[in-house]
Length: 312
Image (cartoon, rainbow, N blue to C red; front, side, top):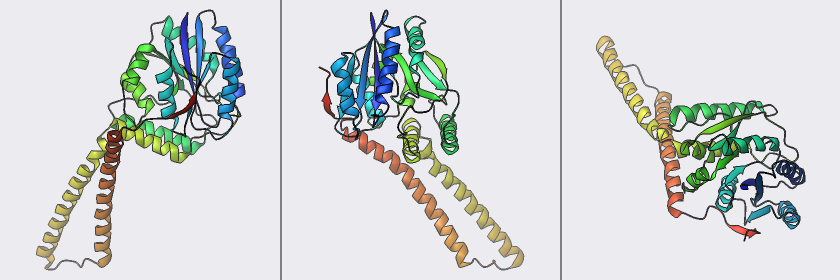
């Protein structure tokens, strides 16, 4: 019998975990003739009763394994920890908030076990229930990164997926500290079967993804998967050089034809200084973002620390 390790990142999910556990065990029961389930919960430094609830699940169900971090390391760290501790022939991710429908799991397992696919992944087909501003930012991010990056990332692609062990090993071979898992999924490749998935409301609790966190996540993706921003200062410098030459030619022509140069006011000088100074600071900032990531990678600190687990 083949085994599926289903990884569930959790951060302050105490309200929804009982409902999630009921749903996931119901689906596992429908697959029990062909597949063994390992439910691997990763408690990402929750401040509510998430860990206590997971310990209760583990006491009555030996399929339940949990890893509890010493603090909040972020979803990327939780996903990595789950993969590193998974033992199944297949491994997958699903959110605890029930926005990912567990009922798709049997079809996804069939795709990777019987149909020859390496990955069965869900793609969101709508953004119902999401704030329009967030939807706009998300769509803009995918358009931007797919224009400047060599790694194409499908818009609407979700973390909800099931993968073969060869795919899991390939992902684990990528050891960068600042991880952008959606980019990693695309970069490693492999044959993927996409499952359309309608957006669902959270069963309970509130989303942990603020606009600020989404912006930081987007920056990690852009800087991690393209060096194009480093070329922006070069293009800006060339543009300013051309403008300065055109301006100088204009001044010379005016001097020859009229006999004097129109006065350049203090405001004009101040604007020019601020404009050029701003471009310089932007250029330094872009280079600084890449340098900061080099600094983080060189330190090579642990990507997460485990405070408690029932995994032997």
